[in-house]
Length: 421
Image (tube, rainbow, N blue to C red; front, side, top):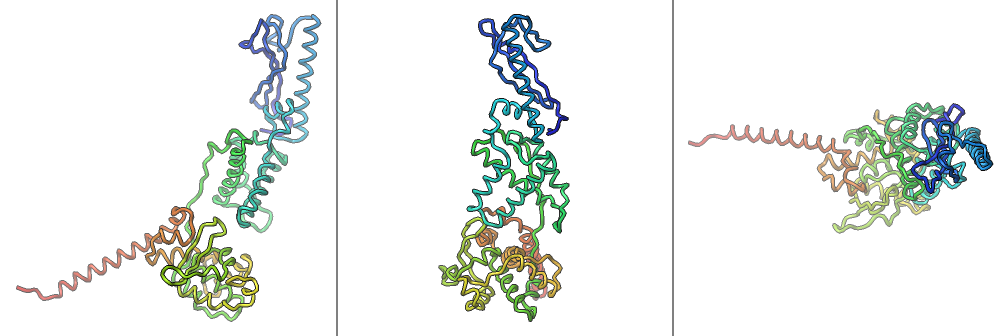
């Protein structure tokens, strides 16, 4: 649909003959925009014999006929004026929108921008800041799409349809950032579509929208292998001599996450009271994930305990009441790039890579059941943990290779033994 005078637009009047009552047929106005039509009752009736069906008007010269003709032309002029007003506003014009404008329902409808703003305002106290940042980015792309594709800043929810969703997806795929950011990859695009859909689902639950424009739409996520450090790569980071204090501090936080599976925000929010004595009389880490509020209980390995001990009396940590001195995620990841260069690691070393390393190299590869790993990572569903299934397969392969070697050795030993008569 378009917002300029290139729309096909028309208004005709006709009789609804099946509604004839006492010989009088009600007159309706039919509005058509780009082949889509809606009907409006004009609150007048006429005998069928006094109606010219081909011209869509009353026939005759009696006073009541002339009065009816004048009234219908006023209705037509008002509908045309409503259409022209929408054209001047550069709106995404539909027959339904012209009808609502004519009937005075225009201001009663909810708009897309209002729904997005309502969602983000109400969710900012519920969702983590990192998640909200993503919703604000999706909001920015929606605004850019409306301006670029329809030359408008807003549309009504009733104007959303399957084509609008597809066009938004194509817009994201074609979008070329003007700054240093990279173009959106497929999964990034699907995440924006996913967030957009959650906003629309909220509007449906609030009964602001009847029809779901996403009903026929299917997201197309591509499978991505999660990166992680191998045992040798992790060891190279742990043992590398670092003479710069800030890099030493960043390494400690990264290695701590490798042995606990905690995300950046959860590590930064740790307090001494999050360390408890478990049922096995050992020290455990007990907290809740910032992202989902799911509980996390992790038995502390010696490597993690050593790092906690090292920072027990750190002045910045003591001042903040936290387990570790706080540093921004941006700075942390920037310093990790330096550490990767010093250690000769070619992978994109980010703090989140430590969480994947815990799930793979530290736990699953060493035979920890996936159900236990899922609990320690604080996943809501074990399906989320199954993204690391390749590691389980690798471990299974190694175990079977070891079993094969033991069985072959047993056969060799059996052959070497002297046979008795």
